[in-house]
View 1 (cartoon, helix red, strand yellow):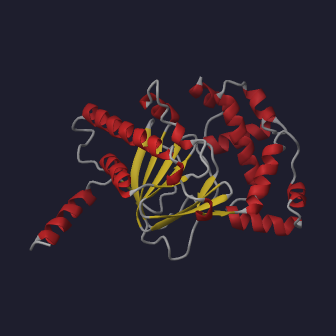
View 2 (tube, rainbow, N blue to C red):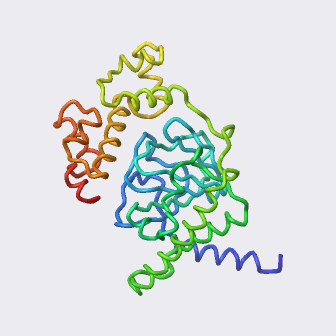
View 3 (cartoon, helix red, strand yellow):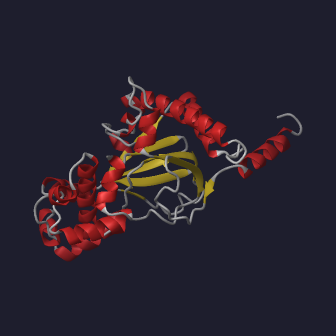
Length: 307
């Protein structure tokens, strides 16, 4: 290395660090503050997102440095530098803590709404497709493609051009970066060799069994005792084991599943009554309370957003 090169590089990095949109590790926010998309850098092990949750937007996690683990439905993905994780809307997921593994983790988080991503799509290419129809939610691309995608994310996460200086130019540049990023991401995700292999995933049979049973009997009355019987465990051992794995109670997991089903119905144009009945809620009052607590708006208002 030439004399002084390290100093110049360090100064450049320091300057860039100051212009990064960063979310503190202790920030537990799991909702968007902007209408279309958000992108930011996060350092260290998260304090929030340790229990199963879901949201109505898409999420991408890119590991810049260190390691990171996430549990999606009944699988855990252990990721390293350069790996991508794609999380579809309304999919149950949570951060999976591994002791002393994630303290040096550095990653970029991208949240984008279905409406925004659809607006970037063309007649011949649906840019939301990369979130669906895959055997794995995690991808590992060759270094050339990885660095190309990383470049687009870094352009989005830096704030050298402030919106207050020229908001119109900033929006156009960001839309361009997002479009290029998702075009290449979709092309790469279509190749199975870039998806995590089965041996790279950690499956959780208990969660898988419970999830499959709930999906198959959603419109029926489901009890904790019934779930425990399905997995051949005593009620209290089942409750403790399930909470250890997922971070939520079996009852909360069931309610989440029902809410996801109701949301799907609402987005497809179903009425409020039809949506809660098709999701297996016993009465409207219980449904309304759970819906408001989770989404902050009544189901009718949620439906209007997608009509």
